[in-house]
Image (cartoon, rainbow, N blue to C red; front, top):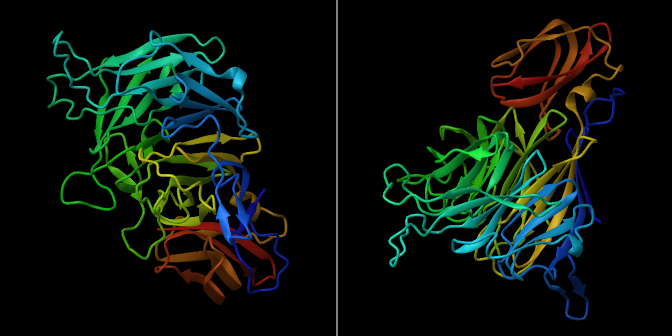
Length: 461
């Protein structure tokens, strides 16, 4: 087991007896497959890859979801089935495999490709329809339906919820491929499903009420992305859209860096287009999850494919003041990658579990190679600064600030630290600090003229 601890606030230049600094910690819980089960061979002086998990085929497993302590993986390796893993260990629970007949699940290029879970304990599965505009030559009937089913994991009962085509509706629905990934928000009484459209700027939102999806999806056209192109945004292959709330979602695809958009497709935030800025590598990889723990926002996104080191890995970022532009980068995982076999699907499924202790577990899979789980813990900044050691009654204003941070009493000294622990400002015997050159979330610490310690989080815009 590996553990990576990253200091959120570094060593302080002054010698006051401040409390321990808050941290973000990433812990590898398990890692199975080519890299996870491989080992270094000292005789050959090289790393020797093992085999992929026995339940994993070539690219026959392209989607997964977490629910109630288990990982559910849509599989076509041995017929049409859902492979079930113990989320705590990553080991397969063979007795709980859910198998389907051609009467249960059918149609599309692949009868089973996508999977998601709902708050009410049901699974949703979908086919991969690469041409929803196709017509059967013999019957002259639509033949490329996009299909979505609900599955009860306890009884294995299957119910068709969506059977959709868009023949002769090119202007209304100018796309034809659906099912690379599906994700769900809410429950079947009141929720929605997202499905990105490959090689397009479109994401489809399927609203559901009382176990009934609307007849047609809401089409969301993404307006901006990085890298920018002269034409429309191009998600390329295997785009994964991840719901944040009823009004926003994160998305990552083979063709773009991770972004967050609203339900009209307007860009809310993405990584800087500055080549020197830290951002998702996003080289031919689609997969993303968003989560909040201890009042802090994080994005984990697929970052590399089999041609970049570490091969087939994801990256973890913390959003600063709701923004990805100045996101804090916490590492690339697995550090040794996931394997070295190609993944022509370009999809890297990700799933998430928020634990009772307000930590998160990120699950990451590279089809044809392996699967891993990482636990992310983060200290609460508000708890961190509320320690009784800080006794001053001083306050700051305004907060959020833009140009200047003012103090209600004179401070004998003030230091401002960014989220990496770097001191970015120091003032003595002052009632204000100029912050015009700063943007993001910072911690102000110091001592007032009465010798009392002070600390507060400030947002600078």
